[in-house]
Image (tube, rainbow, N blue to C red):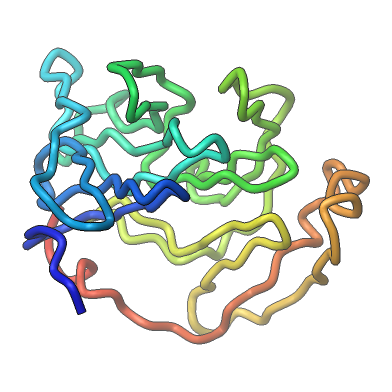
Length: 209
């Protein structure tokens, strides 16, 4: 085991194919990058105090390995602050993508998966122009959500979406065997959901913010 750098109160990280890790080492700061070989972390996002941002968290790389999505958050009940932004490891580029109170994920063949109110939705997303289009399609209204850290428990991939449901809710749905199948499904891609019944509590759940 190799220690890359300190992250005493982290709020997520993402690793690209070039060995760059984007992460946050504490709950009330911006995002940093560090090499998978270790070294000194370099700050790559700064909190926008004009927007009353208090934290950048839950980063996830997009397919190009250069751009990433992350959540900008405020935990003092300031409305209109919490949102998913686009960032880049090569520039100071910053663009708001969608307002939400939780993390988001990209899923092939081109969807942004995020929490809208209390419902997990998927909306067409261009991973080259970095814009949403069309309408969000509801996936589930029973996804576990921890408001005090702004985290919904799900993950997405090219094959399927995996979501943790609140205990007691049944799983349903089928999986698609290929990207071609998923693309053909269009709005009906909600059939890609696979519910994960096991419920576990990550360490960050018990820590505020």
